Amino acid sequence: MLAIRIIPCLDIKDGRTVKGVNFEGLRDAGDPVELASRYSGEGADELVFLDITATNQKRKTLIELVERIARTISIPFTVGGGIREVEEIADLLKAGADKVSLNSSIVRDPDLITRAAARFGSQCIVAAVDARRTGEVWNVYTHAGTKDTGMDAIEWCREVERRGAGEIMLTSMDADGTKDGFDNELLSRVSSSVSIPLIASGGAGTMQHCIDAVKKGQADAVLAASIFHFKEIEIEDLKREMARQDIPVRLEKAGAD
Image (cartoon, rainbow, N blue to C red; front, side):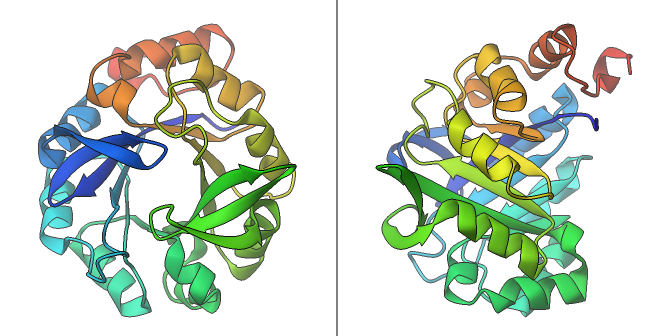
């Protein structure tokens, strides 16, 4: 089993890191460059940067901010928000991103995944899936969680894999920001349906929530925001607890393996 990754997420609005509940009620969480630098030094395995209003406001991701963050960190860096074209992906990778996260644009144009994977490699393409439960199924939402596509989230995850995505970042809109735990049922359903790595997103409140996302949800990585931004949980402490519960993690910061 590969090491489980711990990934802080920077949701960006107007150049600041923000965090809300169920994609609403955003509050300021700090300067993204300072946070990125902190996480890189604290042992995070990767970093995700999402310009959460880029799609709705019909503007490009903040290239300059991406460049500033990339200069400050030494860990892999995924950028998403408002990316619609292959050339925009090229610009972001040139600016310092290692991967891009695609959401609304690939629902509208699924072939964008195929074109991007062919040019840059599947390892650079992360399919972001925002899902909300409706009865016994989960629907895919786009435009920062404001538009219900009516698409089945599990089938969509299969489709993005078929089209060449190298990874799926799966956010439960029902759990997002609640700190009540990940939607492990959704995670396990998707995990058993695809063979590419799965990032769990939405709901982290305790160390055990993160552990359950791996053990029960079968996630390959755990993404969280507020618990790290506001220092409710330290990354190193989380990794040590995961290791204690027999989950493989990288502990380089602590001088262990």
